[in-house]
Length: 284
Image (tube, rainbow, N blue to C red; front, side, top):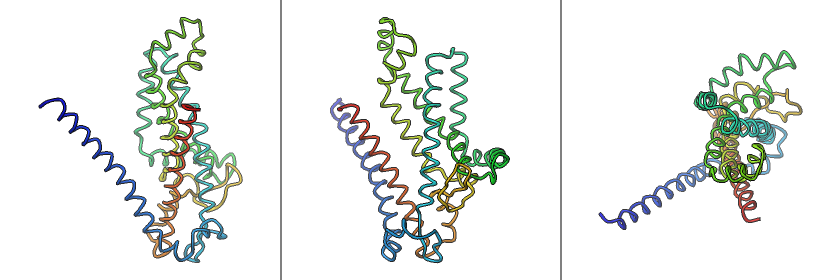
């Protein structure tokens, strides 16, 4: 078989897989919209942000406290995990001796493979009582941030390590020949060259933080309220779906699908913001 038919076959295969991936996303969004329509037609979308509270059996559908809980837990964990993950990758790639770097990478990979329920169980029996001894009740936004930080840290650390490894060595050697210090090379040469991969890692860790359910459900207290401190219990959108979908009926069930739509909108906004930042840095 000549090269041209092989290239053509590969082209159509890639087009087909890309089409399938896009179709799956569209089908998920369509399913969420169709399941949400009954309650959106009955009460409208504004009440999901203006009702006094979340009591679907009493026709109250305010998602705002759970949206704030989701955002606070996500932002707090990402702000902590991102510098820790990137700096750990820098240490592993440019400072640690090989005898330390190899087992360290294996340890991070092991952390990435631990099921979320194990993190949640550890948080429930160790972290929550520890926080409760400092400031009751224990299940809180702080517990959720700490658990999420531990869970997403391997994601950003491994992606950052792979991104740093892909920086051409001639860039590093050229900067060293100019007399730059090791940190000067990392800050002025390596980080700019690896920024696309680092941004991808931030997107992946943020997506996991937004979508995490079981661990958050176990350590955050599941109280529907807007937190005013790190020690207040919260309920996230994902935990709300997991807790109530089993017995929800009618508009209550449809309202939970609206929660899913809000989560999809958050992920779409995250990807759009990342694209805007990436293009702004490249073309700005």
